[in-house]
Image (cartoon, one colour):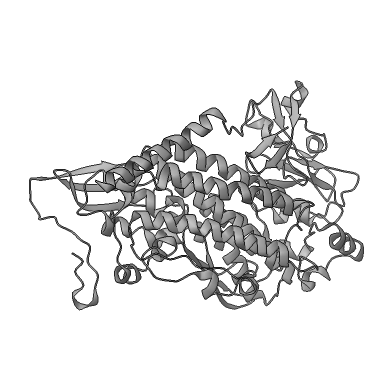
Length: 156
Length: 404
């Protein structure tokens, strides 16, 4: 008999715990693309290339673990410039960390979509152009994640 | 029922050949809730007589791939063993590489590694609990655990710049220093988690329906656990106090005080409760790490001095590591090194052999899930079929990790 009483108590506690969150929901997702969660400082997004700083040493292509970064050599030149194939890139940031001239940088942009596989290949010229987040271009509201004792994560 | 004659452990196979009352049931390989594998279950009526885990559906030849590329490239590769627990999966590899290269990471780097390892452990256990919940059709537990995982992923993202593929530890140190205001953010997340764990207990682990599914189901005896070579929370739930954080010297664990939670029962419930306790211990470890963390560089002096003076100054100031050019072709000296690390699922073991070239001659990985997969064979027979998902969920088995 006592186990029935104990179980009844357990059921009631479980239901009450669920009801608590029915009244005060704990949603931590946001509606993308109306809202855009801004990544934190130092986020490893798409790569930006600064050709004027580059000394064409090729270390970035050497360390790339996925073989995504390649040196594109122009006709008549000896040294190449880096380009990225985003079909392969794993956003580890090794190329940025090894660049002795800071000619590569990771931007916070990460939500770009492409309509064909060829578009994912970024030669040096394309890599030097700043990529924009399509959601932000369409006027998404920027929100930042805030840690909260009551709700875990809020976005504001 | 376990036969142990002549020191060999046989499976609890209750099947007689040619018995027509037994029928086979194939579960998988299409994602039976947590992963890509197949179970060949033989049933007599509703009672399981044998389970054959058919693994290998997500085998990616990771050891071989690692042999074909420079040593440092193995870090982002082997992260993909266990994407939910990626720092714990690679910290062992980096430790082994450091032993081979004879590099000593500075103390601050060790503390930062420990910090991320414990954040990963919490996220990994939450993942395991969520999956265990959905296997019992308890979708609230699934939603809650996966939602709360987001809090820890956010912390990891602020520390490393990526949600899952952190690639944080490199030979000689870590890549980034602690960001501003991390301590307060963590404290909020920790208080939230501690409160949520009580909610988890009430809605899931103390819920009489779940208790009825978990208690006394899939009992793994202490002797059986150590004989089968089981690792991680599954081992500790059977009363064996073994933890690679204590067994091997990596990270800053030797400076920190923590308990290794164990339980004696060895059933599904014990395995789940050990994970809950480990989350609490991890929170306490991170609190100590943030309190005790020493100042100093985050990359070994051996590599820092290879950087140009201007860059070195900036690295020391900004806390963002720049690799020396040497890293692109880091030569591993001839020799061998081993390292162990405790992942959320258990102990991971690395054996790396160098031959003087930039590529490892051989890189051996023994993953915790690979050691635990044998449990399917031993725990399920004798139980009703409805207990199978309960046992599967409680083991926190992760197929991509076992298959490598």
